[in-house]
Image 1: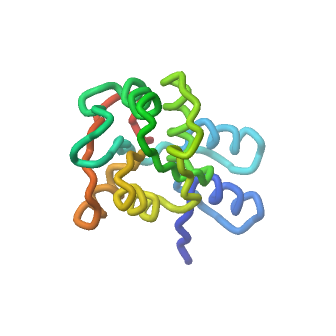
Image 2 (image 1 turned 180 degrees about the vertical axis):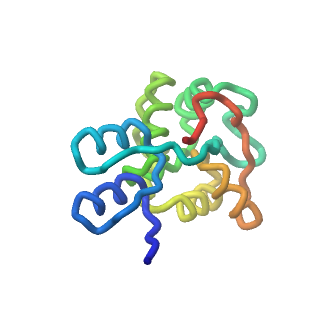
Image 3 (image 1 turned 120 degrees about the vertical axis):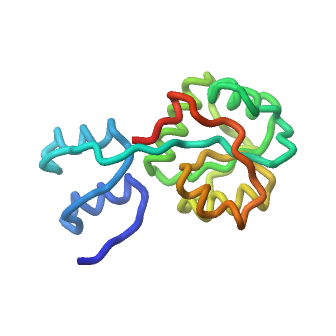
Length: 161
């Protein structure tokens, strides 16, 4: 048995092509649609963690302690850099939902889509002194190698099933 790590979107696309027998993904709405379309047999919740909004230790946008929506408004309105996975993953899905909740549409030179996995995106955010959305497990694992801090966490909107 081989294991392949990818974002939720890529994992579901591989399963539709018959390349996968079991998915462990985190995009509930897309998972339900996947099963409803007959591409999967069943959906079962497995575990839950949390997302974090992380950024430079000096927090130039002042997002610490705010709700996720208010934090994203502060980032967008202040034209602070935000690095997105931009890869159609479950994390990218959640990010798009959070921007909608913030009533902002990320665009322009301060919004950068890495098109890469979480580790590479987190590293890029650290190097560029930018903000990003990350799952708590990846952040804990990479924390010794990045210069970012968790600024917004433990909010219902950041639950990661």
